[in-house]
Image (tube, rainbow, N blue to C red):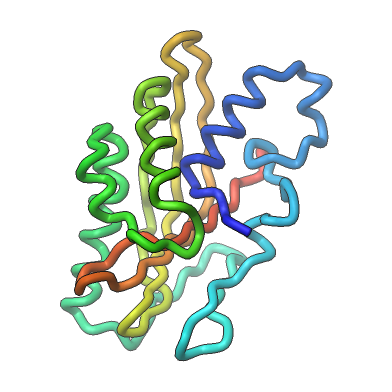
Length: 192
């Protein structure tokens, strides 16, 4: 079963919550309320890898440990790819954004991603800010980058706004010698 890409999940949740009444939103189990939304919850998944049985991540507390085995040049390349992933989305640069998306991703469909992101750019003003960006797992074919995200979304036609924070692990795979996003896991912060 395909995972929804972080942007799609957040936008869909925002769109659905903006369209539903207050009584329908209570206990809905969505990204916007911090609850698991179904069988494809990011809390319940791990990433499979050829060299390791399960490559996963644990998001407990505030400490984020950097991978110790990552060469400096690979760390730089991963952080640059992650930076492009965030900045090209904020700039609504579809062509540049798709250059850091894996052609054969594990967590979503490449062509569906392209269509959905294009529609998102047409309908929403989105700004994502990443902090605490850290490479937490690394091997020569796959790496995981952790970030604390702040997402601000505004629907252009209605002016409806939503601000969301959470933690994300972006999984990168090597394709043609370049690091590209192959799947994304997002856990929204619980509103206080």
